[in-house]
Length: 322
Image (cartoon, rainbow, N blue to C red):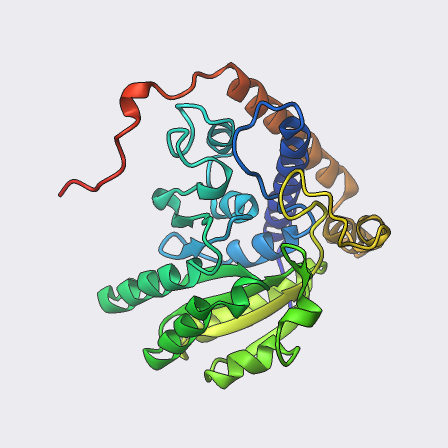
């Protein structure tokens, strides 16, 4: 597998943006200035970055309640996202969606979703449209280990196979469906075999390794674009924070996240492999880090200073006018 320098730098920029964004939202949420629920993606960056950077403008992404990473990777404006999370009127969704419902149709982001397992039917709909209209687009849906046990996911996988839809199903298995261990809750303990039961080829990979994710996605996307039907990827990693902000995470061993951050950080792996192998220079990555930190600082400052939505907009964006 060969990945050019421009692609590597783009991948790192996406991962670092997601990490810095999530770490900052975690900090700001504790001040009480962010309304609603927040579910952070920190620790899972390689999945969103390595997969979504291989998608095009005609391709769509359906996400979960933990959708910040997917939104950033698909090209949603970071400052507009921060405004949205703070509930401001100039936010990406007018301050009405908040953390769990960020969407931007202009970049193919079908949206984060507060309903577990709701993304797969949306992805199938987008893929069916792309196939019927012959746009050449494909749809990628990310879902967690909890959603993998939902009927909507099973029905969508069957539907996608029956109609040979251009859908990439990505199971982001962070070890817990809220607080329930996926090692216990997924019957058969082999998600790839479950996908194969629907006739969908799949693979299982280490989500801490950007290169492993990139390779698996590259192969799956190539097959889909070659009209070979849907594909499935099972990605394993650990989220750094609780299911939601405020979750005490008492169901986790006390050393789990500490060890993950120390030994299995996707960004640390990426930096070591690319600089050690002469693919990138450390100074290039450090420069990206500095740029992203400035971007996130500006995003937070602007969000705090922005206005909340005017009450006159309360009933707008509820029904579509034809």
